[in-house]
Length: 248
Image: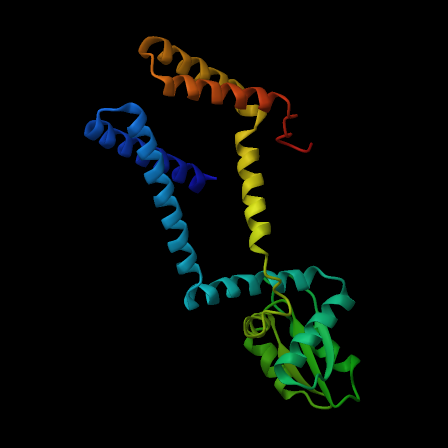
């Protein structure tokens, strides 16, 4: 929210700077206003294009996939056990080919896998040739040493950090890319909710009255337009029920 407010203030400052520059150059309020809006529109479009180019570079894509991999491990910890095992099995199959017998430990990624848990899973699968123990939490060196020392079955330990690396290598399995149109729709809906907010209705009415007073004193049609726009936002906001700040 703070970044959006900073961006809005920067846009207003740029528009005011362009308006003052063109006002001094052309001595016309209407021309200065139109040129200022045009320059702001061009700069915003150019900034979005540059931001899209930066996001599409290789380093930024890797960084985004890495952040998504951390969230995917958390989702694996929250999924039902059969769904999580199916997803991890598909990931291991894509990464290593044949999938051995699989045991999954679903814990929060901030926790650590215990040696007792590894030993219990190994005992539960005695008689198998190989066992892959996958966990959504971290495994320390002692757990890795224990897993490497076990036989019949041999144990391969894949903890949260290893899962994140596998997801980064094959993001198509657990990272569903969000469509651009869906993201744009969500951004528009979020902006509409910020503008049409019943909590801001009184503030918009006060600002509309201030703009109307400035119009009466100066005769500038820009103030009248701003006053009418703020009045419209206030009236529309009053039609929406306020969102509760607390559930209980």
